[in-house]
Image (cartoon, rainbow, N blue to C red):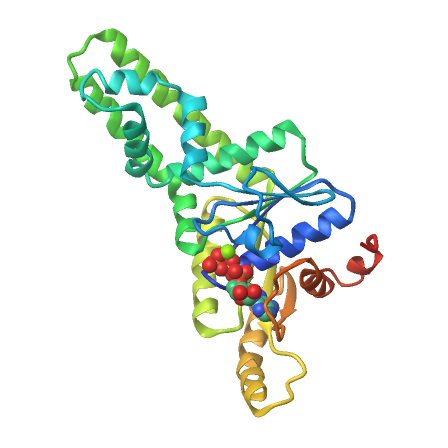
Length: 300
Ligand SMILES: Nc1ncnc2c1ncn2[C@@H]1O[C@H](COP(=O)(O)OP(=O)(O)OP(=O)(O)O)[C@@H](O)[C@H]1O
Ligand SMILES: [Mg+2]
């Protein structure tokens, strides 16, 4: 099972992803939580200092925080030095700088390679559950636009390369690489479409809700299916004027969400009086997200 947690910045994606990963590991499933966030929040939330990828958190639970370095490694494995060799016959450039240049040139490449990385993990069947904690909304949308960006690039590429009078052999190898890239992109989009479940995380506040519609229509456009909506930070048991005011304000938004997304499974996660960090506190969140299922799991 592969699940992506998506949503706007700061709504609780990492918290929900970590809670969900903990739950699945406690059910006895070998679980990997992956983050592609620039700030290492999964290791922070689980209190893991080991830099290994993956790093072990506890029995059945592993985390992997991937960055530019891993993407470069993936580029290396997928396309090797072929592109570099063609490229460096025109421009004098070191291999490292070339990789840096390529990853910055195509904004969707990072995300696309991440999808590819997860797809390969899935094929290797080492984990029963993979949970992907995505970076905030902006980058999630980049991810969705990747095929369009790649296609645009692909359409231009042959014209550019055909102008290069560098011999038929180079042209052919470039076309070959582009074709492989195109296929990779298609495979990855299909993987997201058919093998991956999306869980959207939001909070009962105006801006977050306004942005939800946009994200849902983007996802629909690509045929990606959201199976669940988590509404985080819901104020419960308000016992002060401060919280009562917050709770009252949330009431309208919660009603709107429940009606508008009635076709989805909606789960509410209360606002806790403490930050959700460390296994014990995540187990509290687990009770809210998984209800009675959280109680039947092993008592560890
Ligand atoms: N239900 C909650 N009750 C109390 N604190 C919470 C709750 N959910 C999240 N938090 C806290 O809010 C902060 C932001 O949560 P989190 O890091 O999970 O958000 P995020 O969506 O992953 O953020 P980013 O977009 O930056 O990756 C964290 O400090 C977390 O402990
Ligand atoms: Mg996060």
